[in-house]
Amino acid sequence: PAVEILLEHRAQSLLLEEWQLEQGPVALRQYGGPASTPSGAASTAGLVALRSDQGMRDTYQLDEDSVVLIFNTVGTVDS
Figure 1 (spheres, rainbow, N blue to C red):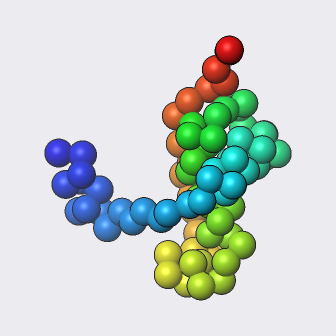
Figure 2: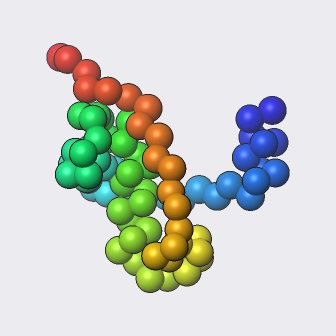
Figure 3: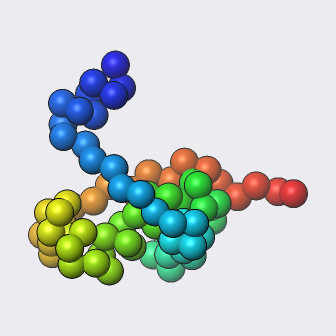
């Protein structure tokens, strides 16, 4: 059911390189978010990638009036 709901609402995905994913936790902390891992902050990394590329902003219809909800799915992991 989850995929059906996402498709119903025209959810889209994007592909990021590993170096872009590594930027996610850094950006999340810069914006006042919690400490996280690259996989946990993948949505933040995606937003950073979108913001830095006009073609991607156009494709995803992201502009100054857009409202974006970010999910952080993983906190820091103690090793």
